[in-house]
Image (tube, rainbow, N blue to C red; front, side, top):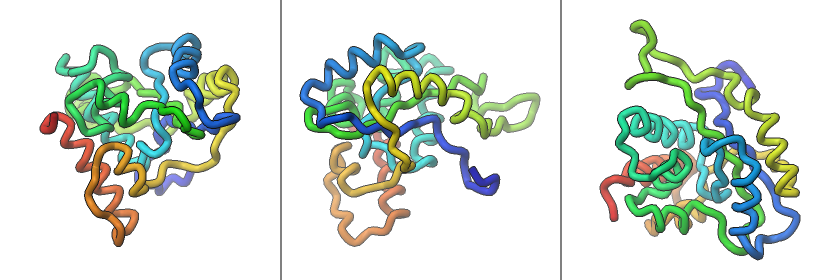
Length: 195
């Protein structure tokens, strides 16, 4: 990864299932059985727009986690809720969770660094460790094997289909990637303002 990239890669690995999902709950059960802890989750492939999008949602999650103000009982559930732009857990799973027919998904790890808001360390702002992705790759690879999936060699990209899956029905037909990414960020920011 280039040192001048705006942010390091978020610890998310795109995966491809051997065939479209017939029973997503079966895949989720296998994943939950083998994941190292609740900081690992499966995310709809189209729900991730960019590294900035994922880190921004993670930051919102981490603030809520450190303040004990999460709506969800677990960090994985809260992340899905925030990325879905809703206050309702059930809606979040429907939007950002796996669905029948899905062929791809993201294995996501939610890092646990930063100890206070706004993540100050002796008066200096804590930077995202550039090795966060690499440090979690071995666990991600083990999860891929258990899911009988293969790695997708793409990073998150904002799509209109992704916005629609997350419940944003605005018209983005003539929008560029930056505008679509901004819509993802705004959608996530609405999580505690919508029902």
